[in-house]
Image (cartoon, rainbow, N blue to C red; front, side, top):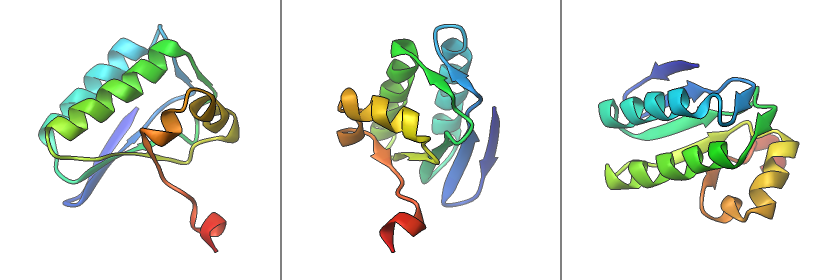
Length: 105
């Protein structure tokens, strides 16, 4: 997991798995990033291959924490398989998912 920052947003790259085995470390990194920065916190999920209920809980918890510190959590590069999981759980209505520019045009 890597964190890059600029004055308007921070980007956190998530690895291939966000599950019970990785969620504690990811949660800690996200909370530190949210507390330390400003602007949007962008989660780059382009490498994410697997997410479970624990991982979804990390996303929801980070979203709530972002709101509490007047920031926004943005999901970027969501793979189709992960997007289907977000749609089935209706989290795509709660979490902000960035739409690729090609999809808008």
